[in-house]
Amino acid sequence: MGSQRPLLPAQVRDRFKYEVAEELNLLDAIAEKGWGEMPTRELGRIGGTIGGNMVRVMLRHVEEQLAAGYQPKAEG
Image (cartoon, rainbow, N blue to C red; front, top):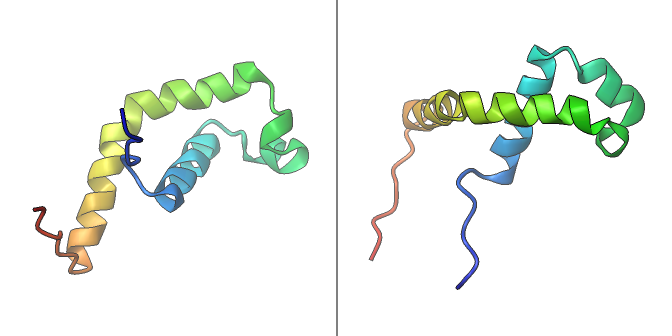
């Protein structure tokens, strides 16, 4: 099976990851330790929140693109 294209661009995923970390008050710890040194328990909180809020963020991203005049390319 071929590789799948990510659902969201890397820039959007990163922005979302930081938004969730901010909501969970983890930005200071991430700035101090870095993502690689964060405890799994803390990062699991981000993952759970991402799963719970992904649709909301995806819709906001699409709305921003449409407001900026984005026109999807026709497939085929």
